[in-house]
Image (cartoon, rainbow, N blue to C red; front, side, top):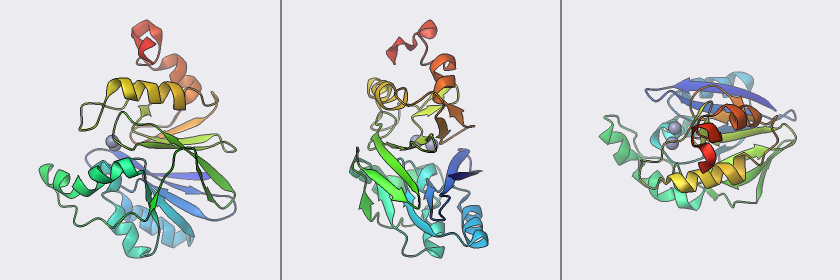
Length: 216
Ligand SMILES: [Zn+2]
Ligand SMILES: [Zn+2]
């Protein structure tokens, strides 16, 4: 799997283009840098199987319109628990002073424990709420890559003060769905640089006992 990162907007959100060796690709969390994602899709002539949303915070969905403009039929996957926030995203954006316009209707629902295949890649869908309702993590075991949205970052964890957030729930998600992955697994987060499970297990102040990380 080849991964391209597109970072943009005031939130510095990372969107990803994951391209299977066999050709088909997916877009994950298209944010403010969506015009560049659209350019890359067109320049490489990529066959995009779907847009996959880890959760529905505005910075992770505000590029959907751009992607749909070049790929009007592309399926949009989201967890059902994230739909409420997805529908509220335009109002949420207005509160931050920018206009999101109408978001396209999601077409498919993630079911935790199910998988999502594209080309020769298969994501395990892992349910990781706590930062936002209906947050999922997408793990590809062969490539040892996981797209973790805003669950965990290099040296940090997702905030839990936003609507539907809960610290205990987030820690349970990290403990059961992230720290159970192989140490070599590369974690691509919604913000900041990539990291690995092993690096976070020993170096993330929120996850190591020395700093009270026994919460995880
Ligand atoms: Zn978020
Ligand atoms: Zn985010």
